[in-house]
Image 1: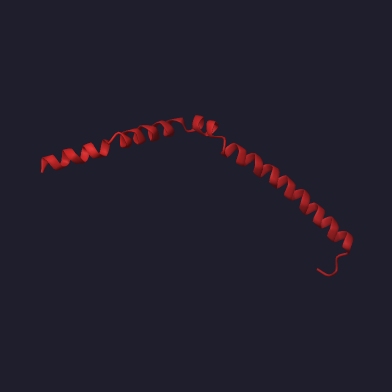
Image 2: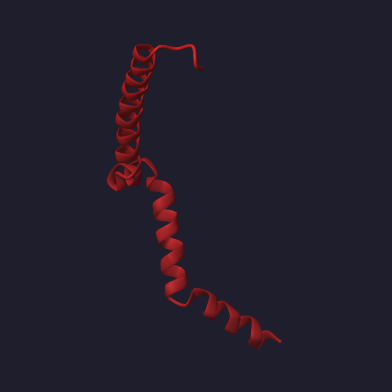
Amino acid sequence: MGDRSPEEIRASIEENRKALAVSLDKLRGEVAEITNWRKQLTVHRREAIIGAVIAGFLAGGGLTGFGRKRKRRR
């Protein structure tokens, strides 16, 4: 490593900075797309509806009612 001139080292650092800037811009774009909840909801509409139905069932005491029916049978 000691055989590189200061100019070569500076050029290498500048290349790394440019590559890092490109990577950061790409990452920002990907994060923005992933965190776009409206788009994710549109893409995963079926799964969201199923999850909402299950959550509503549980919040409405669906399992509690089911458990009571089983206890009465015994």
